[in-house]
Image 1 (cartoon, rainbow, N blue to C red):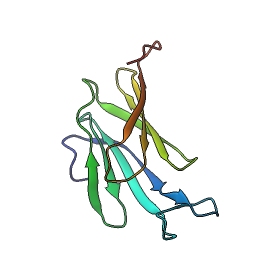
Image 2: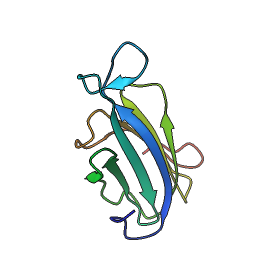
Image 3: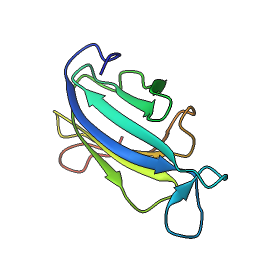
Image 4: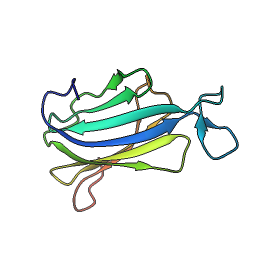
Length: 115
């Protein structure tokens, strides 16, 4: 993916929007807002609009360790995802709108230290 400054380590598709009654996320007009989340060794994650093929959010560097893993909670809305770092830290985020900054829910290091 163009936009990361180092190797991409993980990607995951997700949907945003309110449920339209059939279990799928919707943007309110019946269309799911499809996004792709990517993590990288550059210590950032990015949110991409799949339909628009555009970068809509780029995180700042969250620490000294590269991001190695990504998991998205399929129960939605809202979109919740976890980013795992090389040092054992896991950051948990919640994303309601693609272009808005994700809200940090929690960060915990190896051994249970909370940040």
